[in-house]
Length: 99
Image (tube, rainbow, N blue to C red; front, side, top):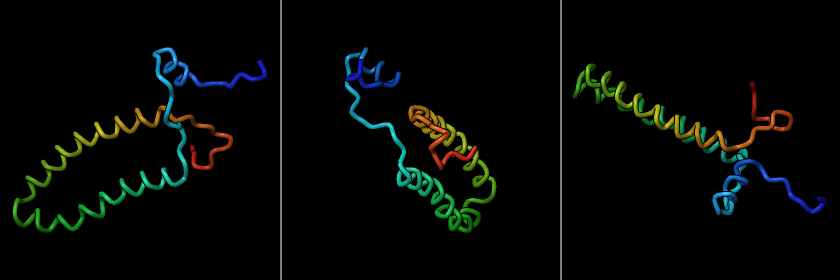
């Protein structure tokens, strides 16, 4: 019993399916900042396009474009939520968890 290593349920399930876990499940500060930066640069890249969009296509296409893009952005959010749900969250020793 002293030599046993505790494994989580995800790794146990992979072992049951015959696979070995090869990727580490951890979020470092760098990875968290990289995801935040990639999502925030979206807004700074879109803002300069407002003028030309309104000039050449009009407000209706701009509004409908936002509706269509927002619909598909939900799928990206769902995918990111699914990925993030596989990472363990420890409230006692994780300074990035604020809620």
